[in-house]
Image 1 (cartoon, rainbow, N blue to C red):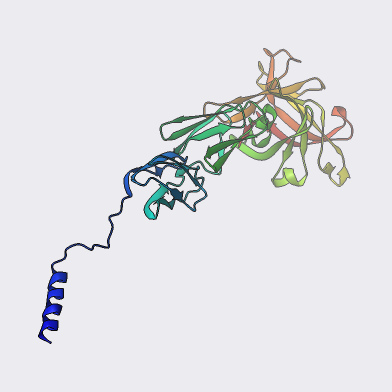
Image 2: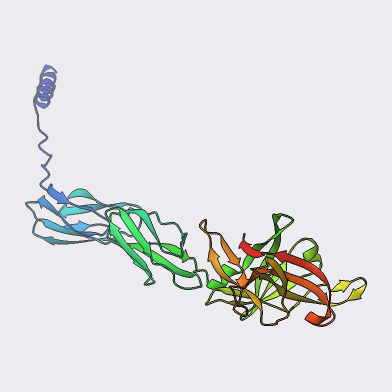
Length: 358
């Protein structure tokens, strides 16, 4: 019995003195170096291992990674990542029954283009600057010749040429980075045609009762050079008064002919009459005015702007009379049974009248 106890103690003592497991083996495969951090474009990296028994296999379940082995060096290729999300995968390297692991990582696309979905450009030309950056190569292009694009640092510079047309136009800026596309639509205003500049709402100013008075009228194009001055408020509008005028768009002039037929309500004292319009002539030497029985006599106004940019038509007589002797006084609308000689009564007179655009 004593011998058995002494044997057990000897066994316990022997185990407590061991410092190594005789059944454990040292791992022979080790990662020496690794270059497997990829940007979104992808590319090729490498892993070098120490493996006395050689590399017998490389495994990775990620479809975007491919590998090849030469000796103890593993070439790792990553496909381009078009997503904004980064990604990673584990690479398993085998040497007989031993394995080593390493994680392959790839950045997602980080792309910024701060162009608005749609912007309005001035008809006389414009420029815009948008912040942009990307961790992948990118392009900015225009689909029209009149929009020029360039990139300086983190700035996308958009220059829009003057629109010489009388209609608006549209161009699209496209910024592409990897699989990401962003667009900005630029709509440029049309140039205002001479005719459009002339049309619109005006004040008909005239001098009466020692003061200037104003009437609201609209200048409208009927067809070609046939235009009309239409009264839009007060008794003039109630009578539906319309004065026909000739407008030469290229020359920028308006002409109101003497003895022109006027549209409107021609009732007077219970009777129905026609309406006529004629120019009042100023006798410069006598400082008096009178009617002109001449269908060729007219008032003509050039379209212009004053020093404040206000557009106006300022009338003067045409060349039918000697301008040194006669000048413009105004124009009048009257009732008539037939032309100048059939005049029944005056309706309205506008001394020194001119048109000023609102």
